[in-house]
Amino acid sequence: MSSGLRESWWIGDVEVPTRVVLAPMAGVSVQAFRRQGRRFGAGLVCSEMVSCAGIEHRNERTLGYLRVSSDEHPLAIQIFGSEPQAMAEAARMVEAAGADIVDMNFGCPVRKVTKTGAGANLLEDVSLACRITETVAAAVSVPVTVKMRRGVGDGSRACLELGPRLVESGAAALTLHPRSAKQMYTGWADHSLTAELVSLVDVPVIASGDVTSRVKAEAVLDATGAAAVMVGRGAQGNPWALAEIVGDAEAAQPSREEVAAELIHFVRETVRELGEQRANGFLKKFYGWYLGHGRFPKPFKQELVQLKTTDEVVTRLLAAAPGAAEIVERLEADVPESELLLEGMPISIYGGG
Ligand SMILES: Cc1cc2nc3c(=O)[nH]c(=O)nc-3n(C[C@H](O)[C@H](O)[C@H](O)COP(=O)(O)O)c2cc1C
Image (cartoon, rainbow, N blue to C red; front, side):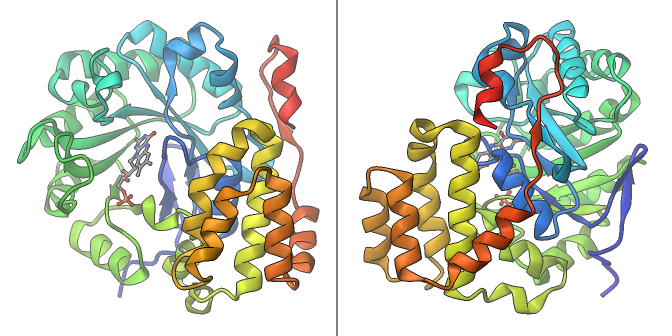
C-alpha cells in the first residue's frame, strides 16, 4: 500500500505529522479528547464547532472552547456562522487563542444552525460562502479551511461546485463528509465524490466518513487521492483505533487496565475542564463507548452511569481494574498546564484549569 499514513503533509505552512485527523464533534471534542487523539497518533485535532455569535458576545461557555494547551498542536478550532464580518472577528479570536488553523463549518445539518443561514445552508449559497471565506482568510494569518457535506438534498453534488470556488476565495484545505445534510448519519459516505473533489482542487482534501480501521483508511486514501482521512465516531471512547490506523497493530487490543486507565484519566481531565457538574452529565455517554467492544460486561456500564459523582466512577473503575492506577499516574505526570492566551477574559474561565 502506498498510503503512508505516518507521513507528514502540509496545510499552508502548518505541518501535520500523520495522515489521520481527529474529527470535530459537538458534545465530544473537549480538550481531553483532542489531547488523547494527538497522543494516539492523530496528526491534527479539531475543536467542536464554536458559535461565532457566542464569541462575538463573549459568552463565557463559548470562550471556554478557545482554551488551547501545548500538547494539542497542531490544532484547528472550528467556527460556524453566516455573517462574514462576525466570522472574521471570531477567526481573529481563534488565532489569538493559539489555534494553528481556523476551520469553518459549512456542513452542519442541524436545524438550529441551518435556520440562521450557517452550516449546511452555505453549501447552497455559493456567493455568501465565498464572501465568508474571503473575509475570514483576509482577517488572519493562519490557514483557513472549510469542512463540507456533499450538499443539502440526497444525491446533491453541490460540494463539487462550491469546493473549487472556496479555494479561489482562500481556503487552504477542504474536508468533505460526502453525505447529504438530509441523510444526517444514515447510509454511507460516498467517497467517489471525495475523489472528484480531489481532482478539482490543488489544496489538500481530507476525507471524512466511515473510516474506522487501517484497512478502511488505506482504501479511502488509495481510492480518492485525499491527503488524509478524518476519524470521528470510530474514535469515540476508542483512541486505540487511531493507533491502529497509523500502524500500531498491537494497540488495537488494549488490556482492561489500559482501558480503565484511559477512561479515568479522561474523566479527571474533563472534570478539570468543565467542572464536576457539567462533566458528570457529559461523561455518561463515554462510559458505554469505552467499556463496550467486549472489554467489560454490560451491567458494569449500567452501574457506572448510575453513580452520582465522577469520584465514585473512578473508585469503581479502580476496583474493577486495580492495575490501572499505575498507568493513570504515568498519564497524569505528562499533562501540561492548559493556557488561555486571550487577554481580558472573565477570570472564572481560568477556573477549570
Ligand atoms: C456527535 C457528533 C458531533 C459532530 N459535530 C460536528 C461538528 O461540531 N462539526 C463538524 O464539522 N462535524 C461534526 N460532526 C461530523 C463529524 O466531524 C464527521 O464528519 C462525521 O461524523 C463522519 O465521520 P465518521 O463516520 O468518522 O464519524 C459530528 C459528528 C458526530 C457523530
